[in-house]
Amino acid sequence: MCNQVFRKQNMAIAETQLCVGGEEGKDSCRGDSGGPLMRQIDNTWYLVGMVSFGDRICGVRNQPSVYTNVVAYIDWIEHQIIEYN
Image (tube, rainbow, N blue to C red):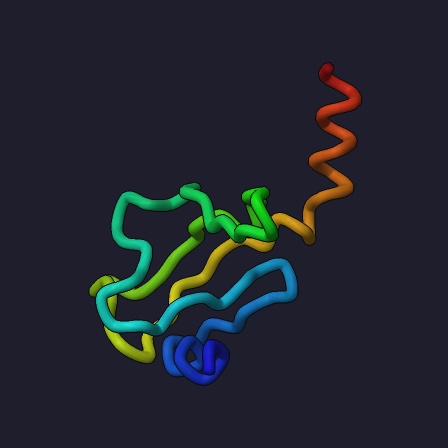
């Protein structure tokens, strides 16, 4: 669905991005960039994405938002932690 939605705006979703949402009333919105997309597994919360962009109107059904896929950058993140710790 995501590529279909954003193709209309001449945009493609990369492997380093996640397409999320599309539920009415539930979405990231203007000013949320960099905010977390969290997932709970058992009793532990994990950061899986960071708000990147979406439509100008928030929470519209079938209009997803795009998040940066944290897993795609995990090697770089770990390297930064080791190098600067």
